[in-house]
Image (cartoon, rainbow, N blue to C red; front, side):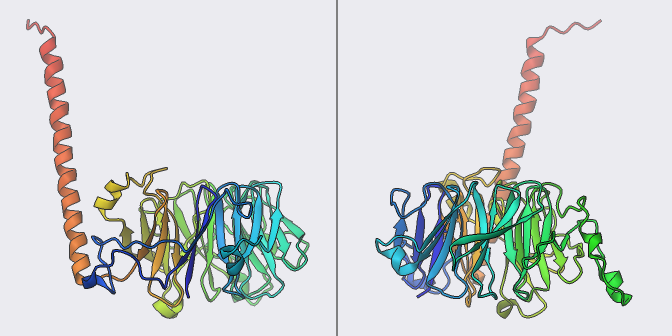
Length: 403
């Protein structure tokens, strides 16, 4: 079985069995549903805030345990991190562990390599907490940020390397074995990093990367993701930029993703790197929640490959737009491992699945886009006509004397 986890602002956690056949599945679209045919899944289990086993405030992050597909972690605005197993979650058993903190938990991460069972926790305080699941204790903290820590991510190639992003706009790189300050801070204006020293055969001066005025983003940095190889780190921030960093040198690769990036969420907004077995080595593809759509972009060049948007009719039916705080805003995106299939969570409470499209689907979207353009042009003409009518009415109310 393949499960999907979702968490809501109402503190509920839902478990979905993706192998179940959804309702309303048209026979002519049994493999690849089109935008006009909505398939409906129902959760297998829902744990609500009314249950003593659940969280009491909104869910901030859910992750599967990297070494056991039947175990997951959840964090919440109730200042706690909880450990569940699927069998216990489906029964009436209590969570396997509850860890409480003095402030809101924005996100958490567990290394896919280390069997030390360390969980990095990003809280509203200016340091990263490390929790040992074996001893059920906080081991130590990584201090350095000047505000809340919003996102954390472990390197997939070096088990002791951790990245953190915060409200201060900084992205810090840590070696959790060291008691010293972080290894370095990424800087948006630094396109070289320690590469010149490496090329000259000199020992890199890591002190150059730890200056406090280095910022990865102008405004809060609220998203981090490593590429599967660990070669690059991707960050996102309130300056509405996605940046790609060379993990070996700390250099900004200066990839530009265009003007369509939207990011003003107070919580984390994570880029998603599509697995290399789908895209091929050396051609990384990103999914990024951007307003009411998901941007699909080529990571090394920044080229937008696709914009995944909810069909206009269903956007209208659900009450709509994807502007700041809009109900259609995409809050999260996820890729289903081993499949060409993505999922997105929206501010209106819906979870949507995305499959490859057929030619018929593409034609349907193009027709819809043309219709939206015509509606927009007609609306602009009406606006100008009303403005002209208003000017005319104002003139007719005034007495005009010619001399």
